[in-house]
Image (tube, rainbow, N blue to C red):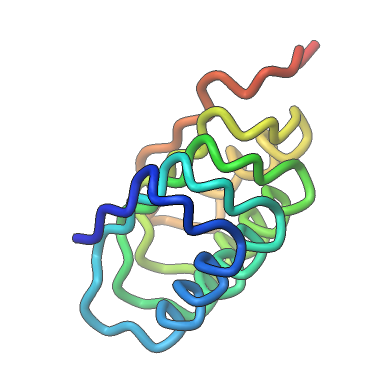
Length: 124
């Protein structure tokens, strides 16, 4: 378990974490809430999710990841076989990306919980 909430790691730190996640064989929970990782950091983590086989909890709320990176996360969930909980609250991800991620359990049979609270857009 690694808690890095509110540590100002920004995109550079998220890219470094993503690189480690690509070869990680032990870390099961990563919490990076409120670090301002932005779209670049989120995209790197999404790429790492495609190959990571141990992470089962990813909490990355309040990081301003935006819709494009959220779409990359949705794509990564198509191949990820271990993630069980994904929390993306307060990220301004938009309706289309949220719907794409919400459809992930159709192909991803391990994902059990997803959180999209407080994303600040009207999804009408």
